[in-house]
Length: 194
Image 1 (cartoon, one colour):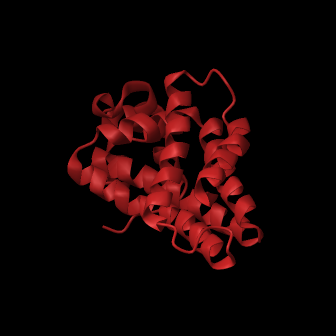
Image 2: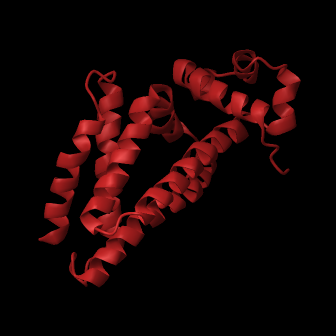
């Protein structure tokens, strides 16, 4: 089923983020999402197969847009160190600006079944590819060691960013997230360059 895009699609996605953040995925009925979006329950099914499809679609939309914006910004930066810092900063900035989305990505997506997690991992590949491209560029330019284990380095980078955001969500966003980008970048770089 090809997804219809447009104003109502975006309304439903945004409503789903808010409803899932407030109620948790398992307690978020399609009817609550429809009400929040200001559409009839049946309208949801013109765009999505079921609640699981809404969750995957919202992650695809939000992550897809983030990856595209990141690619554009990274293309204008030539320094590997700055590229990594920019990616970290953009990740933190997006989630600091949308606490509901942070709750959904850091908590709710992880409580899903194995099939759903596999689909989420497919969506995540675009983002992980950005990290890989920064690492490979750093290896080619000699910024990182030529024998760097890209897969492990990617896991360390993503895991560190992810844990910083999860901790911020768990502490009810009581501090600013974006200022942590620079120290996190420095810490990661010191480990990657040693």
